[in-house]
Image 1 (cartoon, rainbow, N blue to C red):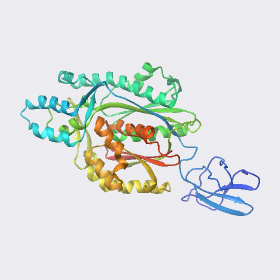
Image 2: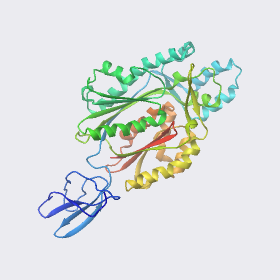
Image 3: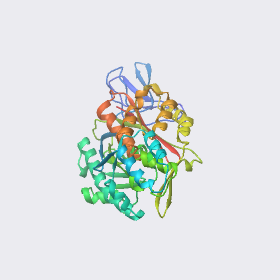
Image 4: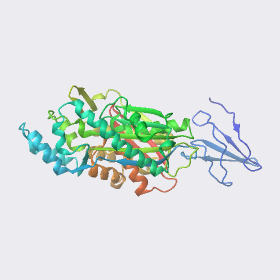
Amino acid sequence: MVGTSRRRGRPVDGSLHHELVPTRGLFRACRPPIYLGFAATLWTGPTWTRLRRDGELMQRDLKPGGLEAPSIAGVGKAAPAHYYDQETLIAALRSLWGRRHFNLDRLEELHRNVLVGGRHLALPIDEYERLETWGQANDAWIRVAQEVGEAAVRDALAAAGLAPADVGALIFVTVTGVATPSIDARLINRMDLPPGIMRLPIFGLGCVAGAAGLARAADYVRAYPERVAVLLSVELCSLTLQHSDLSVPNLVASGLFGDGAAAAVVTGAARCANGPRIVASRSIFYPNSERVMGWDISEQGFRVVLSADVPRVVLEHVRRDVDAFLAEQGLERSEIAAWISHPGGPKVLLALGEALELPAEALALSWKTLREVGNLSSASVLLVLKETIESVRPAPGSYGLVLAMGPGFCSELVLLRW
């Protein structure tokens, strides 16, 4: 709707009134403003608001992220007990692929270039050779996914000060295994979650699913502001390893990806939470890019599709997409205090830093996560988020941007405010 009419709110104190005026050609409804003094900011979202007192008009551009936004109340993580440094993993793969007269020096070069120091594995390392079929690997995935998934959800709920009975929605994301009933359904039984819980299992988004899942959880609690949504990511990448595939993408993946789980508790505006608020999100799809990343699925399981074009896609698109998204919120890149990026790999992180013109320290936590546990697909960005909340602790009022890319090819941006 475009026009000149205005909607007058109730008096804030005596002669002071508020009005809404069009924003980008639209009228937006808002809650009654919170008056914190004559020069106060009124939390009504990204809307121009006018204050009138004795005929005087004042205009303020309200920054996004007001009291009506959903909050991240807690983030949790869990990992299988089996952790191996990269040298141990290289030695195991040398033993496996050396029997086929593969160039083992090339294997070591690829694995060291990913700059991963070690990774968690779903199973003890000597059990992988006994997995002869995809069915056996997927059965192991179902078992371990429930174990680490439950642990991650409980960790997140504890951080939020909530109990399983408080959960109104459970969003489950993965790209490394399949199950019906899905893992979220199995966790309802294991954790005694409410029988009326809303379930949303999502398969196939890959690395972007951690950021996309946050956005979908925020959408849910915007509709039901008194409720609690939990996002759970479980990725057990080691169980997708193709023993017979000596392609460069599979060799790189065998050195880059690790196993683990992460969860985030997102609460609606009617609940109190101390974490950052989810201000806005944006999904972006890049047409005709299906072969950049994904799976080829056969009777042997998941065979990785991983193009060397990923850094190029980052350089071509990310700056434009981020700038456009922030501009719609009245922000610029210089106003982002925390960059919470999925750690895709060294070349991707370097391309991201270049595209966004970031100082080296801006992506320090992404590099740290990559070095310590490898790329955990959709769970990785949630690990970076957890570390940001607990160790960086951005100043109140500052902004953060969660960003990830994944199969499609696509990206997801989520704007936070502390």
